[in-house]
Length: 384
Image (cartoon, rainbow, N blue to C red):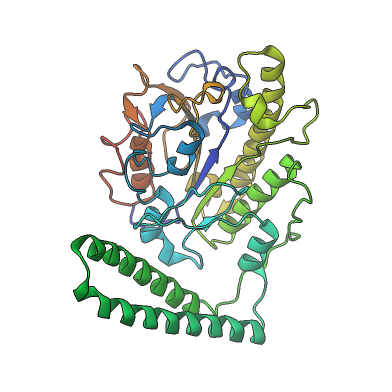
């Protein structure tokens, strides 16, 4: 389909501490798999998801450090490359007020621009709600216009100074300068877009603004806020691309859990640790279940939001207990894919996770044959 003809959306979710593989991956491959412990909670969506095992990012290593590269797959010994959300935004961003919406629980940048600069995520969902839905007053519009004008003036000044420097610097520094200019051009584009939307009223939503939990330990409430914002942003077509992480190092308020989340992810095969870890991860799956349900129940023209939204849930850790970045957990839901299967890649870790990124881009209507370390689209994952 042509980009923009039918709205296509994408949400990328990273679980910084992984998912306990035996509770996620079914024992059988193909379409006749018996749901695993976690997938049993998603049974109503069986025809709307694909679970995939055996994928990894070649050359991306370092345990927890790999989380920053999960959505670009750039090998750890290379300069950071553009992330999937920012790449897709080049094609889908023009249709909405916000090109992308990087949000999350803090601590990690998952979004990266073409020059390898981080695109910061907002962790206060109350602030995101304001940006998306708070009506602009005459004074707030004037203030926004002043910020845009001031930013443009600063960019002009920097541009002029850099141009004067250019003839006197080395080739390596000129390359850095070119990267800088591309970053400046991108900032200019975003400022121009912000200005063009100033007189377009923001959508009204029948929802209370989220309350940011007072404590980081309120893990479930923080997750709910992320999924609520994602749903409202898609429902109002405020953006078509969202990226966020689900993460907490320390204690989490989940019934039956009395150890830190990070400690439990390093379970060392201890049954009690695994039991508590699964209680936390079950809460994550419950949020996914609720989110998919809301997307499925929301009509848009002759379709549903679920049919028009690709949800990719994964992690940089295949086995958090030993910091392995291999055999990553992958759950792909929604969108125009032929779902209802467990795709197994064997031997594991010979197929790049970036192959699924190419498939997702093509499903979004973006003509892409490669992304990152991909070798093509993901075999067995077909479009409807």
